[in-house]
Length: 157
Image (cartoon, rainbow, N blue to C red; front, side):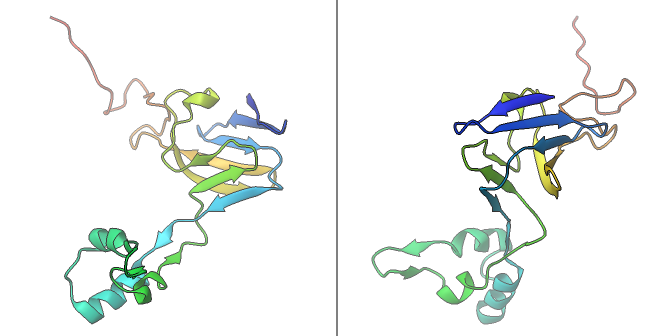
């Protein structure tokens, strides 16, 4: 178990469980939570109106471009307003005073070397941080079982 004391003196604990995920517990009374964007509805409307001029990945960037001279979105405010959020997914948690954690971040600074945030799940006492794991042996932190096919071997000659 690791402890983190934020700038307001709140103490958060981080405990690795048997599945190599991390239980993040503490005071989340004042906390921001982020949810990823869902571009499906906006992109489908764009394709109906304009055809497939942009790929979905290009659209995800273009829909947020803003023209400061014209004071309007480059594509159309119509599409921007259609961007939804995936309300049942959490990709960022930021309790007041810290620590800020988001999807893809390293957990090295919290004492979990090689661990990266894959997802968050709300639990009664805080959040369960799901970590990136090897697809073959299901261990986190870049660690592999001896028989894992993904282990890298260096041969010195």
